[in-house]
Amino acid sequence: MQSETSQHGAKTGLILGIESSCDETSAAVVEAGARVLSNVVASQVRTHARYGGVVPELASREHLQNIVPVVRAALEQASVTLDQLDAIAVTEGPGLAGALLVGILYAKGLAFALNKPLIAVNHLEGHIHAVLLEARQQHNAIAAPLLALVVSGGHTHLYLAEERIGVWHYRNVGKTLDDAAGEAFDKVAKLLGLGYPGGPWIDWLAQHGDARAVPFGPINIKQKPYREPAAQSPRFLFSFSGLKTAVLRYVETRNLQAQITARRTALAAIENPGPQDALALCDKETLNLIASFQRAVIDDLLRKTFAAAETFHVRSLVVSGGVAANRELRRRFMQEANQRGLPLAFPSIALSTDNAAMIAAAAWPRLAAGSFAPEGLSAAPSLALGHNL
Image 1 (cartoon, helix red, strand yellow):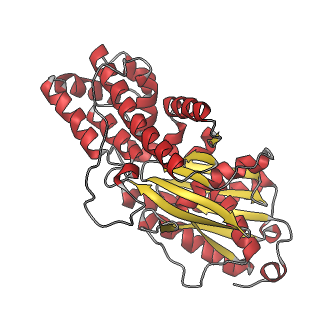
Image 2 (cartoon, helix red, strand yellow):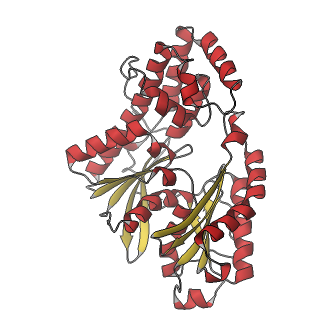
Image 3 (cartoon, one colour):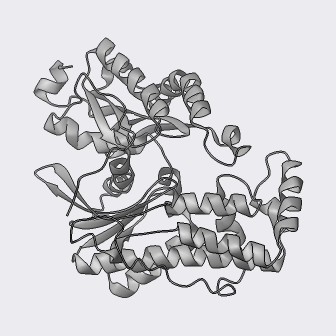
């Protein structure tokens, strides 16, 4: 898919990004990886809330309905025509296969029709570039090498990242062995009769509880269940399934199931319920449990992330992904970073969750390097980022 733009460099710096990896259809126009002209997101939260999680078939159907109007809205808000674009960027993976294919097939067709370069972007790299994008907007360079914690509903990863000759390189030094942190939030929220997605509910309710009331111990991984490179030691691996089980056992031993059922029923009777509606339905013990669970998750993320930052002598720290919107996580990480004198950057709340602006931003270095997607581009649901140390 070569064009005059790809052969002679960017003319306008305008990239249309498309993101459809999970349950949000998004399109954005970003200029030179630094200026967001539009960022439109069609959320599917209400569609999946009744099931307490994302239903892949429904997600794909929603993407099919939303992709055209979302792209049109992004172009209109940016006051940009298709002819003015330098390239089309799309999420290749990881994510849900059917959901990814909707965005990829649309982007391929659009790039072919316009004779524009098509750039494939790793969703995880996008989350890192959400922070880099806003740093460039503020003319505030983030020093490399940097350590990035990407923490969301589907991912909990630690990456060393560094730009060399205009190209970003990544090394995976830590990851979750089971549930991602955001997935643990969702599952515990569902277990306690709260709404979906669970992260915002737990974030809001936790401030009303005692985070030390339930003594969840530190999460330690003593042995590797499979072979990993030496640098990916248990010190930097995550596991939240055991903590989720501990919450379940607490519910069972304290006989909380009856009030959970009553809470779930009461919330179902409210149109578009929110965390505020749940507060009156939670007793002090439940609020303490929620706060203690959140503390245990943040403790583990903080301890291992800063241990990795110290081990690899990074110059700055980036925390991105949906869970990065958690207020207590931001407060704790910022406090620790300030004590250590380590520069720390978060994305804005709008760019913490899945969005297409981060995809367009991550595509900018690839456009400059002439690194375009092959004609056979397809969905890569398990796509990895970078390589292991």
